[in-house]
Structures are given as structure tokens and as C-alpha cells.
Length: 248
Image (cartoon, rainbow, N blue to C red):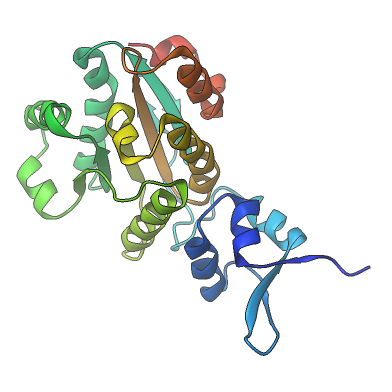
């Protein structure tokens, strides 16, 4: 029996990424597919999608094969790609791990993205200005440090934002990308906490294709117990480490 073929939207749902990502990978020849019918619509087999999903983690879109080894985060060596969550109850705890993490990246001239807004963002920038060897003004002007948020109220829109950012950064050559997301800021970019957690779940799958280390910061004063439990479940990398290292 011939294998069922999935259209673009079904393939995106299967891989839990945006339809734009499917089209981009298909056009680049990274995701095998075929064209059918008079309108030459894309079709993908489940077996090809599974092989794409299970490719070695050292191979990433954008020519990023051979990225550097694990990254230090508060004395813990986080592999690349990596996606961890930290849990804190105040600004000092929020900055303790993530400011050195971003500063190390800026000193290494790696692209860094900080999702934070309002006073939270200013706290990060003030702390980064005091880090030795970090020229914050130059990093911002050269866009090695990108701050703020992203447009979109849905998981698909948020994933498409990251796909476009990763493609842009990796077009300049192999590198490691560092991301810090203050989830109290990110929740305002979604229609609900439930949608934000759907995004976290899909983001966990999507970033496995890229040389990134992501730190999602949860202020436990801002989220209920169910959301914190879901946050733990959507960051399985945490369970390879001592969880206490990520509680601040």
C-alpha cells in the first residue's frame, strides 16, 4: 500500500512548526517532498518527516553543522541545542544565571536575543553594562544583542518569528544562538496562558533543528501551579540536571 501523503498544513502539524517553516525547508531541499496535481501542491510522506525530525542534532538548517560544545549556565553544562527553564521569585534571582549567560555570548560575539519588556528589560541592560568585556552599545547597534518581544498572538505566529530570526542569523555562517525569555513578558504576547504553553511545547520541538540554547525564566509569583507544572513538562532537558541549580 502506498504511504499517505500530507499537505503543508498537515506536515506543519506533524512536526509542530509553522507552515512557513515547512515551505522554507522544502524550498531549500532540506525536507524531501513532491509536487502533485495541476496546482503543483506540496506533499510529504510521514516517513520523510520522521527522518527529518530524527536527523543528528549536530546538523541544523543554515549550515550550522559543527557548532561549539556545551554552554555553561550557572555551573551546569547545557548541550546545544538546549532548552531549560529557571524558576525565581525576584529580580536578583532572575539575573543571577542569565546575565552571565548573555555576557559570555556577547564576549564570544554570538547572537543573543532577550525577550523582556519594561522595567525588567532595563534591569538586564543595567546589569550587562557592568559585565567586564561587554560593550553593550556596540552589541545593540550591531544587533548581536536583540531585545524586546515579538508580534503574534498565536503559536504559529511566534514560531514563524523564530524561524525567520534563525534563518537570518545563520545566513552569516555557523554560530551558537543564545536566547533568554522572561515568560512574564512573553505571556503578554499571547492570547492566554494556555496558548503560551502550547507555544512552549511546540518551541521545544522546533529548536532541536538549530544550534541554540534557550533559557525560559518563570517568576513563580506570576504563574499558578498548573502553569509551572506544564513549564517543567515542556523543558525535558531539565531532568538531565540537578533541578535545584535552576531554582533562584
